[in-house]
Length: 335
Image (cartoon, rainbow, N blue to C red; front, side):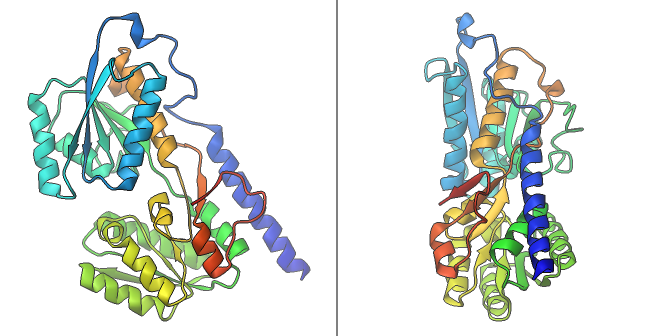
């Protein structure tokens, strides 16, 4: 009994340490507006959102960005925003990005990695701020996080298995086996899930990894895994995102919770995730945009990383499975 208590105490300390450390440094972002107001000049600005889709997650990011820009002095008169939405079509996204080359926007805001890559491929000359890219260097969007080079910088979306696993161990000690399902046609998702498999396995979970190339294969994989594991873990690739509601419904029918990698999935009914919030990545991106509008070189503006982590939990799923966040846990958001 003493050994178990000691393990729990250590795990709680680890979670708190990871979460508090994540709050300590916000590279590329500040909590205060710049000292120079854009209203010091008569110049008005035009900006455009480039996005793959217009789901609730994308809308939340866009609204949080514009809200922060208003606080920084860019109201509806000072900065006009257009929206280029591809309705989930990657070819339409590339076309939308290419069309921006002929437009005289002061700023392009790319929501998500797909949009950022499309903007990069279109070789846009306007400064581009991306929001929520996991690894902009690996994605080819920045030379380094400290000095991006080119005409792009932005904010990073991050998960933390170092924080997630202890929370799972404390709040759901009866979960011993996990299934991980992902889009097998997405190499970055495959790599992410293989890393997740290793980290979960190193933490004494038994893990079964299964890829799916399309929706039918995904549903089959979810049914198979949820019949023989204690819980399902899902990444944030396109196939998972497009079918997240059905995945959660199938797992719930089999009395198995879904652990997610984004707050979007938790808002749809997944049990929990630990990641950077839409609000924080949007706010950090807006602060970078403000610096660009004030005349700072975008090529020299560090990518906003090391943003604070948030624990997201779904109240209905918590009640369904009797799994709750540890008491007094900081940075906890309930849906």
